[in-house]
Image (cartoon, rainbow, N blue to C red; front, side, top):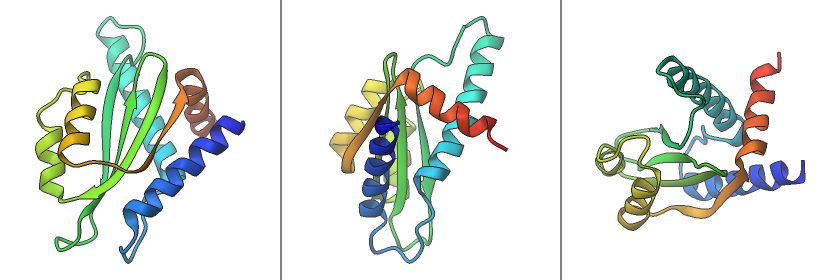
Length: 144
């Protein structure tokens, strides 16, 4: 449980840094957990439907846009064999999409490396062991 609290605190801190100066803060650890649960369930179902056994390694992007004049705030999640890492920041919407469109969802390390070099991340990377992360999102999905 301490791992989850530390993870949520790191995500919250990075999001606060990324969203500073914006009038509205839409992204938070609770919305991240909901997005993660939905995406993970859908990707896992697709993998199983195509003969796989689980969601495997992949990255995903969640982005919030308030106005065309302000940078977009983003959350990138990277599922690896042993962990889930969350990266946050803000940048020009098109710049974010330009990097992301160069990579398939399975090209985790390549996309994260290029993104870090070209755009960068705010705050620290929040990481959980994969089994803890999967239990964390499944507990959200199971709650009423």
